[in-house]
Length: 202
Image (cartoon, rainbow, N blue to C red; front, side, top):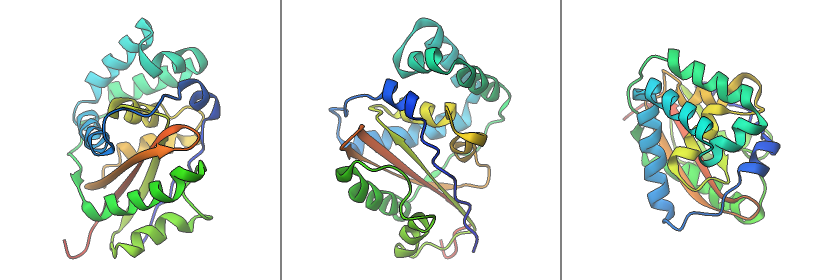
């Protein structure tokens, strides 16, 4: 059983500028929206490239902030999306969502960031859910109040070496995901996305 963990590489400048108040919508609504946006961008990356370009040019939403502070990352994300082939959707998995929710509940009130103690936190959370897998990863977005902004933040991946969060969004091996969102003491909101592939006994 092998787990591919991704470094969080928090992009502080982008977060400080793009931080939004927590959405008035329920966490459940935001979680459903994040999964829907993940599947939409995987299925139609070129359409999201057009949206990203228009939003940056017109100064709309958090994309406009990154277009000012890290225009190279936005341009790179657009170019990536234009050449990215379509991928199958991710199935919602309750066990992955429970693992993600455990992290939201533990981290949100403290205002901390990251995946947990050393590199073991994510793996331990999956283990508690008795999830057997061949590949897994975790993405965390802070300060976003809409599913689209959560996903675009991870795809633009400003300040993250290797764009590891983007690679996870478009990981071809992943076939399931679990999303959990909630309040965060510093950034207002957070969403955790746990991805996995190769489930045994599904």
